[in-house]
Length: 136
Image 1 (cartoon, one colour):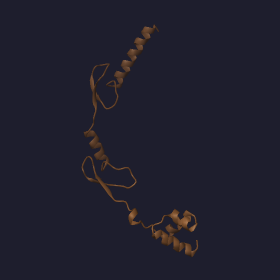
Image 2 (tube, one colour):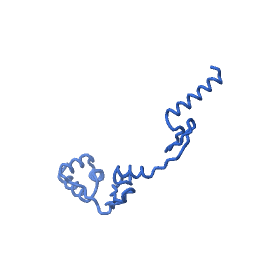
Image 3 (tube, rainbow, N blue to C red):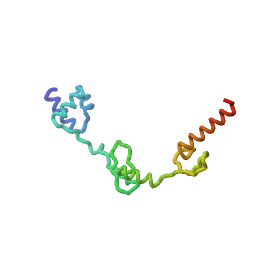
Image 4 (cartoon, rainbow, N blue to C red):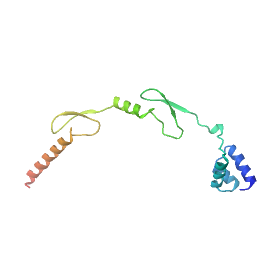
C-alpha cells in the first residue's frame, strides 16, 4: 500500500466505512485493508444513524430487566434458574388412565401407559392372544 492509500484507508475508516467498501473504493483487497487497520489500531467509527437502541424487557419469572443483544434471539428469562422455576410452576400435564392396570397418572405428552412395565405387560398379552388365535 502506498502512503496515500494508507491515509485514505484511515480517513474512510474513521468516517464509518467497512473493510469491503473501503477496499472497493480504493481497488485493493479487503484483507489488506483489514490487516492494515488492525496493525494500526484503527477502529471503525459507528455512525449515529446506524447505532441500534438498547432494548430491555423483563424476566417472565422474577421481573428483572433483561438487556437484549442486537441480532440475537430475544431472551425471555434472566437466567436458567428463572427459566426452570417458571416452567416447573406452570406445567400443564393431563390426567390419564393406564389401559393395563387402570391406575390414574399424569403425563405431559402422548403417553398411553403409566410405566414401561405396564406397556411391556400389555404388549406381551396382546402378542400371546394373537399367537393363540393364529394357533402358533
